[in-house]
Each structure stands twice: as structure tokens, then as C-alpha cells.
Amino acid sequence: MKSLRSGIVHLGCGNFHRAHQAVATQAALNEMGAEGHHWGIASATMRRPDLVTQLAQQDNLYTLLTRERTGTTASVIGSLHRVFCAADQPDRLIERIASPTTKIVTLTITATGYHLSADGQLDVTDLNIRNDFNNPSPITAIAFLTRGLERVRQRGTTPPVIICCDNLSHNGVTLRAAVMAFAEAEGRGALAQWIAGHVQFPDTMVDRIVPTPHEGDIADARRLLGGIDDEIPVSAEPWFQWIIQHFDGPRPFWEAHHGTRFVHDVDMFERAKLQMLNGSHMLLAYVGQLTGRETIAEAASDPVLGPLARRFMRFEQTAGLDLQEKELDDYTDELMSRLKNPAIVHEAERIGRNGSAKMAARVIRPMRENISAGRDVTGAVLLIASWIRWFALHEKEALEISLEDPRAAMLKKICAECRDHHAAQAEAFLAMEEVFGPSLPDHDKYVADIAEMLKRISEQNMQNVLQATLKGESLAVP
Ligand code: CS2
Image (cartoon, rainbow, N blue to C red; front, side):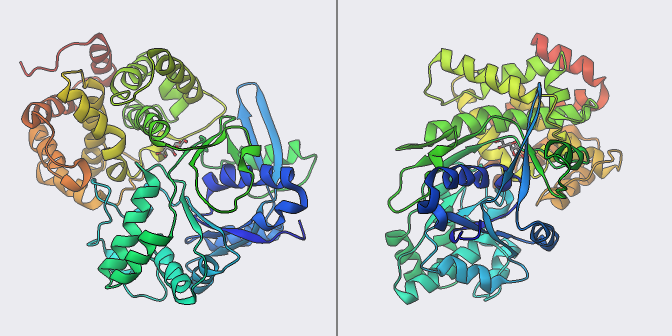
């Protein structure tokens, strides 16, 4: 669209952004007509210049393939007004954030991109974060936001609203605290205070399963578009949810896309999704990989693992959710059906990445509440034991998958130091407060349970262990 201008700046122009926010923005542009033309997106990839080149070759247009069990549909998305690489043009991103024409800044940089500890606070000892202190050409999103807001403050203009669209607990509050902590840590206490008083960081819940692009996407796009070539289509499931806390100031009419809602309190939506979907995703990923299931759909459709995941989702991962039983049943049914969608090729190995940054909010928080209430936590025990097993197998180089995690080196080191000593491995993993938080209630018992599960899945046939776990056989050490 020739008359488009960028009222939104986005950090993290990845597949999720292209299949979620950019799509809702396109719906808003369609609905708003000429009124909406200033709501184009200036989207920065943090470090993928190749994507910038590919998008530029097709005028920043691309295809969204919506994949249902019954077939695939294609639509062309044109809401990306500008695309650039932050690593190549750091000042361009800072200036964009600071520009008075930018009303909204959004982020999808994944949970690891925030450099948080298990308590949700910015890890100011993190090397990437430290490297960005007072650095005019930073690499982390937190530093880019701080630099941009610093310019807004110096110029006395109106700051943009900053909308985190990643799966973090209380993502707006968390991001605000992280930006303030960053400014404080680099000696800009006054800036931190100004941010606290002037910048809005609404909470959001985002939900759409967006698998990594695969070879068939390009052919499908060409077929569905009647022969037009698209080198970088993106595919997604039909489900779309974006729940945004009300904020002051102008915005696109994102509600034009089904599944977008503005509410006063995002907490329950966010917690239900983080625990029931994202937490169960982790169980399916770690256990699935260990049983040779390559995709989430295969793992969720497994006659033993599927029911185990369902039980975990419905009875463990609902801890702390103030919703009716019927609502929880319906949400569970819906989620399991989405996870089984065979048209979505979502590799288990990918979902399993960066577990150390995801564990606290998705798994440990409900686990802690369940233990305190005397409820069963077998699913969480299985999940954690399977995660440790990934690293143990890696350490012995038996598992041929890439292992991406910000703490991978340390986790493999633990496995090496106590090779085949399951109790010591479980103890050392659970002692990492930056991943698991403080000790669990009745800590020693649960570490012993995890160690026992780790021993079983390491020494016995995995399918038999899962059968026994599904039947509810006790983990008590004989
Ligand atoms: C997944 C999410 O990678 C992960 O951790 O659990 O990306 C998940 O697919 C989305 O949050 C679904 O909305």
C-alpha cells in the first residue's frame, strides 16, 4: 500500500509476528480504510538480514497459510511497511522507537530475549545485558527500548505505548521492570523513574501455533496464489487469540481480527494459556522426543503420551486458575484438538528449546501450588526428569538433535560431573534458583521423585514407564 506509514515499531520480525500481530494489523488496515494508513509496521529483525533481503524482494508482502485438518487457505499480508535488521542498523531502530510518529512499540523476541531469572527480574549479570550498558549500538531489546525512551525523554515528546507479545508471566509489568532495572543498572536512575511515570506497558496474552516454515510451504503458497512465487510464506493454525490490557492513546482497530479483545485484566487468560498450553507443550516435547515422536501432533496423538499430557494439562496445569470446571474441560478439549492438528508440523525439538527460560512460569509455578495443596504432580515430575534426560543424553552425545538453551553449557556440565548418578543430577538441576526459583515445598521428596523418574526413563523401556505413569503407579523409591 503506497500511502502506508509506520505508526508501529516492532522488535522481533519472526514467524510468530508475521502470523499474529501483522495479520491482526492487516485486518485493522482493511477495516479502517484511509483512516488507518498510519498503522503500518516498521518491523526490525534482531539479527536476520537474510529475512530483510527476502522480504524486500517481494515488497514486504508475504503469504499466510492457514492450515486446518481439512485443508489450507492462503492470504497475502501487507502490513509490514518497513523491515530492517537491528544488528545492522542499531541507530535506525533507536530513532524509530523515539520518533513522535511511533505510537506503539511491540515485541516478540521469545522468552530468552528478555534475559530474566526465574523470579522474572532482569538478570543484570547476563553478559549480553552487561555488554549493552551505556552502549550506543546495543544488541538486546531491553537496551534498544531504554535508548529509544531516553531520546523521547530528552526531546520532551510523547512516549510510545510498549506492548510485549511474548509468553511471559505478566509480560507488560515484567518488561517495564526489566527496562527500569536496565536503566538503573547503567546509572540512569532518573530515566528509570521517568519511565515508571510516563510509559505504558499493557499486559497481553498471545496465542497462535506457528510452526517453523518447511519446504512444502513455498509450493502450497504458489498453488493457492495461482502461480505467484513467495519465498517466505508463513503457516499457522486457524486459532488466533490476542488479549490486550486497555491502554490510553491511539491504536489500530485490531479487534477487526477475530480473537482480539481488550480487557481490564489479562492475568487469567495469560496464566491459563501459559500453564495449560505452553507447559503441556513442554511435556509433549521432552517426553515426545525421548519416545521418538518428532512432532507435537504425533506426541499428542500417541495413545499413552496423549492421555498423559491431557491429564497433566487438565489436573496439574490448572492450578491457581479461577475458572469453572466446565470452562477448564472445554479449554482442555480445544487445546488437545489444536495440539493434535496433523496439518501443523511443529517439531518437538523446537518446542523443547530454551527450557531453562520457560520452566519457572509454565511448570514450576503450578507445581509449587499443587504440592502445597497436596495434589498430584506426576506430570511435572515426568516433564522435569525428561528435560534432564535430554541434557544427560547430549552430554554423552547419544541424542542427535541440536540443543539450544541459554544455559546449555552449564546443564551439560552438571550431567558430566554426575554422569549416570540420577539423584545427583536431579539435585544439581533443582538447585539452580535462576531456573527453578527457591526450594520447592517438601523439596527433598520431590527431588527424590524426579531422580527416581529419571532413573526409570534412563534404564527402562520408555513406553513401559509411560504406561506405568499413566496407570498411576507410585514413584516411591522401593
Ligand atoms: C511454544 C509456543 O515454543 C514454545 O514454547 O509453546 O511458541 C506456542 O506455540 C505458542 O505460545 C502458541 O501460542
